[in-house]
Length: 274
Image 1 (cartoon, rainbow, N blue to C red):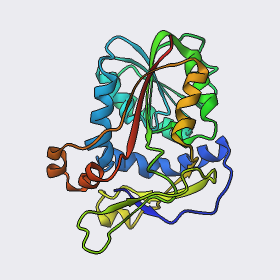
Image 2 (image 1 turned 45 degrees about the vertical axis):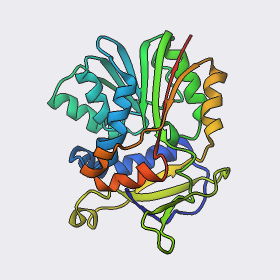
Image 3 (image 1 turned 90 degrees about the vertical axis):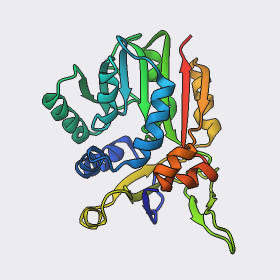
């Protein structure tokens, strides 16, 4: 699991503060992701999410919360006409440099997914968002904007940390004579925001010790608080998935075994604008 450290004091974060934190995270995040050290993305989240999304060839797609563009480039190589937006100017700078180095026809804009006014109504065939929507203070507004920019019958796919398990009280313990680690959660209904500090645990120790921890504002929401705004905006829910590592995955990557046994790390959602 990614290395997690004690959380900071509770706060109420604005989008400006979220952008500031991600600007500060951007250089180390980009370097480590591009080294393949975001192992849960590589070996669990992305394979399942790409299977859910399916064929994007020829579609006009918005990546909402694209970060430094790692997944945006994957979608572009699948044949999608990609536009990526992110609230972090520094992340967008990294994404644009990657596009200059390997042109894939991707357009990047610094913007919040709560304000997509740079795009008109019905601008995209599909919207994707990978591990981003849980990191903003106004999820409901983001969903309303995504609905607006989608074509009729357009698909919306997103992945987030699983809200039922990835609470502030998340942790692992072993009881006496218990070989398998036990997952603990608490504070599921808490509305207290906090800063979570962690690193990619698969990065070499000599690298991790010399770089700052990522500082990521967290906005706790329940499962209902993620799903109900979709219906409220007008979306039709098509599928919910909770990716589970296969036995083969766990043999190849033993750190995945606890997520096969104890709980789900990610939640994937597919809905449609009718």
